[in-house]
Length: 349
Ligand SMILES: [Zn+2]
Image (tube, rainbow, N blue to C red; front, side):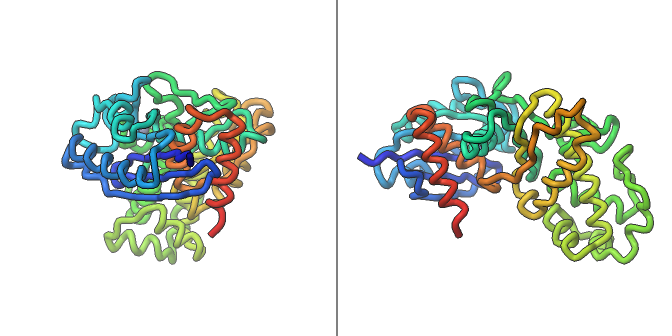
C-alpha cells in the first residue's frame, strides 16, 4: 500500500498543507485562509477541512503540524500565537491526530523549517542554524536530526535577540530586537522613518552619509506620499539602485549579522541557513552576513560555518512539518531519501 506523509503549516493568514508519497513526490498541495478573528473552533473546522483534502488519496501514514509560538510536548499550543483568538490551550496534536487517523506531531513552525533544511543537508551538515525573515524573524536549530526545542519549543527565537539596546521597539514589546530591523515590515518602516526624518532608533546601526542618501530616492518619495512600504518595496527599489533602499538593506544586513553572531556563539552551527520570504527577494543577504561575521564572532568560529539560502524557500516550515511527521515512522535513511527526492521536485519548475 502506498504511504502518504502529510504536513500542515498554520499561519495567521493562511493554512497550508502538503502530502508527499513514499518516493518523495509532492502529491497534494492545498491552502485555506485562516479565520483568525473567528476564534479557535472556526480555525479547527478549517484544519479539519484541510486534513480531509490531504487524506483524499488514501490513509495518511504520518502527520506533522507547524504552529507559530509555543507548543508543549503533548502538542498543546502555549501562549499567544498566530493572532488567533483563543488559540492558546488548543490540544492541536490530539485534535489533528483524530482528524487524520494518523500519528501527529506538532512543533513550532520555525523549528520545523530548520528541520527541513537540515534533512535536505543531512549528508553535509551536523549542526544547522536557521533564520527565517518574513513578517517576523523566526529561528531554529537542528543537530544530527534533533530539534533543539527548549521550554515549550521556544528555543532559538533569534529574532528577539537584542542587538541594539534601547533601539527600535519590537512587536514583542522589547526595544532593540533584531526583528525590529530586519523583518519585512520593519524594513518598510525604517525606510519611512528615514524618508520622513523621524528617529528610526538606529543607534550604533546608523550608517554614515544618511542625509545625502535620500536625494533622488524614489522609495523616499513613495514614503513621503504616505505609502505603506515593506521589504518587497525596498528590494524592488534596491534592484534599481535606489539610495534609500541600499541604506535600509545595509541596516538589515548588519542587524541580521549581529543576531547570527549571537546564535553562532551559543550554538556553533556548521551551516547557517537564511530563509523566509524576504530572502527570496534579497539572496545577497547571505553573502553580506558571511562578510560581516568575522568581526562579530569570537576567535575564528565563523570559519567553520557556511551561510546558505534556504533550499525549500519560504515553504521550509511546510516541508519540515511533513518530514518531521515522517521521521516518527521512518528510519533516517528512508527520511533522507524522501527529502532528496522532494527537494529535486521542489527545485524543478
Ligand atoms: Zn522582540
